[in-house]
Structures are given as C-alpha cells and as structure tokens.
Image 1: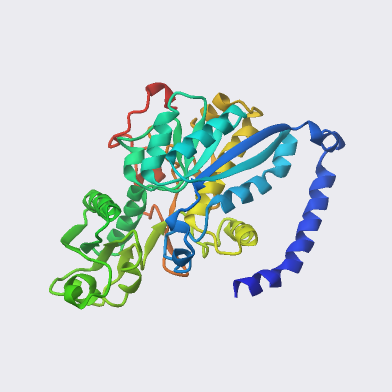
Image 2 (image 1 turned 180 degrees about the horizontal axis):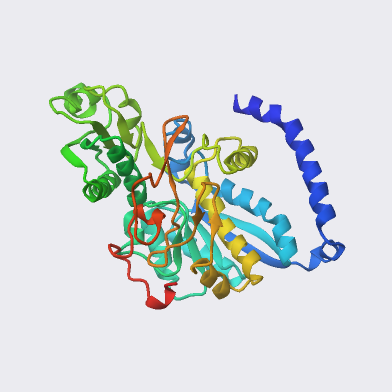
Length: 413
C-alpha cells in the first residue's frame, strides 16, 4: 500500500519539485551559482550499530508504537537535502558522513577519523551506555554530539556532558506529557505494569517521578513476563494481571513492545492503556498534520518509503539546528555555532507549533510532546493549565531546580 501511495504521488511530486527548483534557481544571484565549486565543505557525522537489534527486519515489521521503524539517518538525509539552497546562500556545502560500526571501540575510531577530517557535529544513534561512553571520551574537545535515539533520563542528569545535546525527548519529558493528560482527564488512579528488562524498570522509575510530580496515585505495581507459558499466565495474561484492583488507567513500561501491544482492550476493566502502547507520548507522529508537518512527513516518506517516527525527527532537527545557526550567524566555526544554539536568541521551528531551544543546564532540546494512538494525535503537551515560571515547555522533563546535571556555569545562557 505504501508503494502504491508513493507511486501515486511521484508525478505530482516531480512536477512540483522541478517548478520549485526553477524558482529557487532564478532567485539565486548568478554569483552564487558561479561560485558553487568554491563552497566551504561542512560535514555532519552519523554513527550507528551495523547489527542493531532495534533495526532487525523482524522487529521493524512489528511497527511498535513509539519505536523506530527504520534507521533515523533518513531524517538527517532529508535535513541535508533541505539545507542545499540555504547552504549555497551561506557559502557552505552541507554533507553527511554515515558510518555503521560493530562496537564501541569502532565508534570512537570513526569519530576520531571524521574529527581529523574536520567534522565537528555528530549524530549518535546508539544505546544510552555507549552515548555516555562516547561523550566522556571526547569531553573537552572541540566537537558536539547529538543524541538522537537514547531516551534515558540519566544522560540528562548524573551522566550529562557539556559536549552532548539531546534532540530525542527524555523519558521524563514523555512521562510528564502523559501525566498531564491523565490529570486533565481526571484519570488519577494508575495501575503500573512493568516488564522484566532493566530498561523497563528504568522507564517505570521515570513514570513514578512524573506521577508524584503531577499528583497521580499509583494504586499498585505488577510485573509481567513475556511469552504464553500457561504456567505463568498470572504474569503474562493482561486480564489476570489487571484483576482484583480498581484503577482509572493502566500504564505499561515495556521497552520490548511485545506485551503492551496486545494489552489494549485486553485488561480486566474497560480502562485505557497508556505508556508503551495505546496512548503513547513521542516527539513525532506521522499523523501530525499541523504547522507544515505534512510536507515534512511527505519528504521522509519519499526518502525512506515509510512513515516518519520520533527518531527520524530527532535526527532531522539535529541537522536543522546547526544549519539554522550557520544561517543566522553567518559563521561555520564550532564554538560560534554552539554558543548561538545554547543562547537565548536561538529559536528553532520543528513543525510542532512552538519555537524551541536547548536547555543550557542539561543540553536537552525543549519541545512539545505529541500524545498519539496508533493512527492519530490525540493531544499536544504541554496541556493548557500546566504552568511554569520561566518557560511553558519546561513543564516537561527536568527543570534546572531539579536537574542532577552539573554543566559548567559558563555554558549557561
């Protein structure tokens, strides 16, 4: 069906693209075109695992809510393509150096090689532990790392680094968005189900924080196991796991996705399921159509032949952040660009209806969070009525008063 949809658009897209190219080319001064060969090279680096289980075909075929549906490098490619004409105007030619490696040692070697070739901005599509290791290895060096995949709160807290920026929202931001919605609906009593993985426990911890922050009541916590073993049916059957209690909503912490995807409409009481399935908080959803989002969704679909996910958006907005800084400052030096991105004047449009910027205290991109079902965006957080003394978007995630990150004072704007 996706292929048919894509073919059906091809003729229209080609015509529109040719017309746009003609208009943009005519608008460029002849001197800019004549000097195209003299553009300053500006490369981004992208690093991912070559055998990443998140991108196994068996897992991608499942299309778990809130999880990657393909490598987010597709989003970076779209951003590089969008930056072509702004780059010419700024005298810069943007490019993307893509690397897929087998282990942390090869990650470090690849970054050193690209760094020695002049690359200063890197997109890390890596697990939390590796992101932390890489940031620590290059601490104090003249490079910036964008975390586009790891949502672990600790990377924005005790394990934060001054050279690490986060475009993917943290678990705290996503859970705060869900908590706001539950409070707005007066679904105050929550049954928490958590899986056997350590990552499930980390996600459950994050939700407990959000529940306490917004006054939700976790009535009980129960652990589930994966599989259909009849001898463990009290732990793997959603109906049995959710029986004997009264609650308004079921929150599921399931980073594997297998249990949560079959829990909706299978719990004991007719109650909504949220968290890893049902209503899911994420940076992006393909059904978001406001603020120019349709055009971005179409560009990603043309590039990757699939819907856009939060991870694609995180890679796209990382590249866009630097391109925007180059345009606004007319600079290409690493220090000048980072200073601008972390400053108060930086206002980034991510097609979500808010101007966004990076939090100087932990490097997280402040942004709205979309609350979506399988095929529709139900709400956008922050929700009306949830206020913050400094920035409305800082109702999501750790603000400076509760952050465990200790970035140097001189990095603050």
